[in-house]
Amino acid sequence: MAAPDLSANLQEEATCAICLDYFTDPVMTDCGHNFCRECIRRCWGQPEGPYACPECREPSPQRNLRPNRPLAKMAELARRLHPPSPVPQGVCAAHREPLAAFCGEDLRLLCAACERSGEHWAHRVRPLPEAADELKGRLERSVEHLRKQMEDALLFQAQAEETCALWQKMVESQRQNVLDEFQRLRRLLVEEEQKLLQKLEEEELEVLPRLREGAARLGQQSSQLATLIAELEGRCQLPALGLLQDIKEALRRAQDVKLQPPEVVPMELRTVCRVPGLVETLQRFHVDVTLDPDTANPELVLCEDRRSVQRGEQRQALPDSPERFDPSPCVLGQERFTSGRHYWEVEVGDRSSWALGVCRENVNRKEKGELSAACGFWILVFLGSYYTSTEPAFSPLREPPRRVGIFLDYEAGHLSFYSVTDGSLLFIFPETPFSGPLRPLFSPLSSSATPMTICRLKGGPGDALAPQ
Image (cartoon, rainbow, N blue to C red; front, side):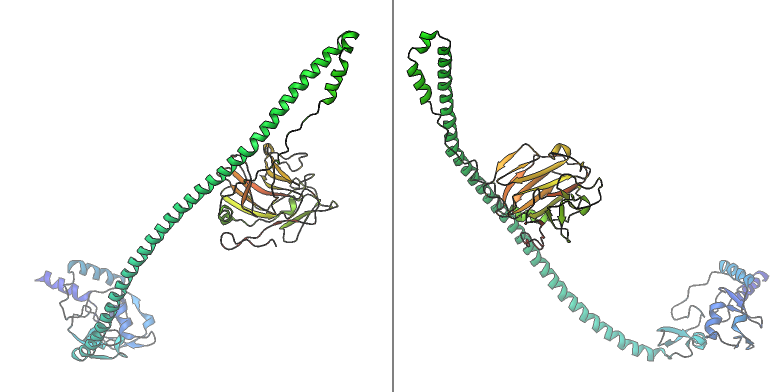
C-alpha cells in the first residue's frame, strides 16, 4: 500500500490549489504556499496589493512572488507518471468542477472556482439557462443575417457569372474585330502597294523610252561625228591637191553639223513611297529628345528649353572639349539609344539646308570634311532641292519637307526618314548592325531665320503638337 500512497501524495503535492491541475510555472508566496503564476495573477487581478493568500488568507504582496523551480520539476515528473485524464463534457478543464455559469463579457463557461477568481469579479456572470436564452436569440439573428448574406452572395454570383459570360462575348467579338480589321488593312495595303507599283511602272514606261531614244540618237550622232572627224583627219594627211579637192563640200559638212541634245526630262519621280497610316503608327514610339549644349559647335545657338538650334553669324567663346563638335556645325541629343524602337520629329520649315540622323556615342567630333557611315554617322542631308546621305545616294525632291520624322529600330538595324507633311518616305539606310550607344544628331548647316526645332508629341498616334 505504500507505493500507491506515495504516488497519490506526489500528485497532491504537484497540484495547484486554484486550477486543481499540475503546476505550471509555480511561484511561492511569503506565507509559503505555491500556485501557478498565471492562476495567482488572475486570482488577485491588478498587480497592486497586498492580497490575501487563497489558502491561509495571509497578506502577501504580488511583487514578492518567488519562482519554485524544484516544485516545477516535481510537477513535470508527476505529469509524466500520471497524465491528466480527459476532461468530460460539462466539466471545467482548469478546476475539474461542473460548468454552471456563463461570463457575458468573455463569452465562456465558468465553474464555481472560475467564478470565485478575481478575473470575473467585475463581469456579468449568469446561470446557464438565462445565458443560453439570450445567446440563442443572438445566434438566431446571426443565422438570419447570414442567410441574407447568402442570398446576396448567390445573387452576386449569378450576376458575376452573367458578367463573365458577357465579358467573354465582348472579348470574342473584339478579337474577331481585330482579326477582320487587320485582314482588311492588309488587303488595303496590298491594293495600295499594287497601285503605287503600277504608277511607278507607268511612269517608268512613259519616261524611260524617251530617255533611251535620246541616248540612242546621241549615239548615232556620236557615230556620225566620229566618221566625219576621221574623214577630215584623213584629208589633212593628203598632199595639197588631194586636201583641196572638194574642200568646199568638206567644210560645208563640218559647218552644218549641229548637235541635237536629248529631250529634257525632269529628274524627279511623281510616284512617292507613301504607306497609309505609317507615320501615325511610328508616332507611338515617340521619345522626347532634347539638345545637349556640351556637344554644340560654338557657332550654334540653342534656345533655353534645348529644343531649337540655329547657326549664328559669330562664333561663341565656349570651352573646348572632346565632346564638342568643331568644326562641324552639329549638336547631339541628350538621349542615348542602345535598344528598342524610337521616333522623333524635327520642324525644319523653309530652311535651305539641314542635316539630321544619328551617330555613335564615341565618334570623333573634331572630324573635318564629310561625316560618313564608316566613321559612325548615319545622316540625311538636305541641300536646297535635293537630299543626300552618308551612304552613296542622291535623290531630287519633288517637294521639300517642312517636318521630318526619324525612326530608329536598333535591333533591326533600320534608320528611316519621313516627310511628316505628306507621310512619304524620304530615305532609308541599308540594314546596319548597330553597336554601342547611338545619339540623335542635328545640324542647321547654314544660317537662317528659321530654327530647327524638335517637335513635342503627346496623346495618341497622330496627336502631334506644333513645335514649342
